View (cartoon, rainbow, N blue to C red):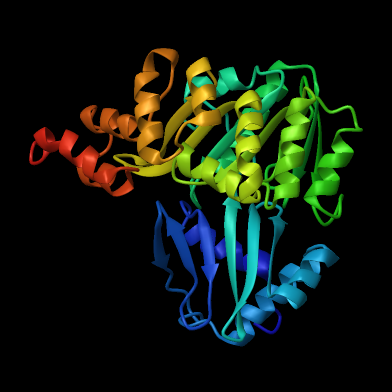
Length: 368
């Protein structure tokens, strides 16, 4: 790989595995791809076991195309993530990191065009959320749950239906949006703005009505998100978590303990929607299953004062089904009973697996 051609290499991998989502390169194993959530090792001549020299060649090529800030992070922190495009092949979100003295690389495939909410089979409520004029809309989920893709589809919906100014502050930019009815300006941390915090601060002076912001990583960033929503902007962002409860707990954990009650009160006033999603094995591949929390009198009061554990939130969402709330495990149960998901896959991915398993006892052995 002395004269290494990464674009050609990725083209070969994706021709071998056209349904691949991620490409993983690590020393001691062949190139691997993730297909429907499982890693598959590819059999490519001369690449039966990647060497340190080969992964270093990949990293050198990637960093030559990345921003100076990304290269600096690899040197100082041992890891960096950024976007990388291969014309005619694909666009990727890249994570480069050192491990045991060698480099590993993960490249997540990004669709060339932005999918629609309908194409992703996401709930109609996400379209309704795109009509909000202010407040915070959260898409949450664990790693590899499609959060970024769902947010991109929501932004595409806004772009198609609203004449407004949108500014994104992303780390990195993944999906590329063209101007539609909306004017969209996309800023990448490390290239267009030094930090997420500075990018968000600047966006407030740039006449933005809608902001899409990468996941907040500290209290200062999270506080500015709240302030942005409190001053009349619509903010779309993501959080990590398996359900609404764990996502909100993660957000609150960014703040000192003595500030969390006040933050809960502020959040209750500005949080409009939480869509907590996972990609679950389906008879036709993997599809999103989405928990839906929306702001009502009851949910806002609970967010300000009630317990935020998974069981309490599941009860709240069940009681609010007439208002359009959807609990994650209840949606899993519905999908099982409609024949879309099997019992084992539902229980394995449930927020409260034992309770769901008990509700599905009648289907065990019943050909679900």
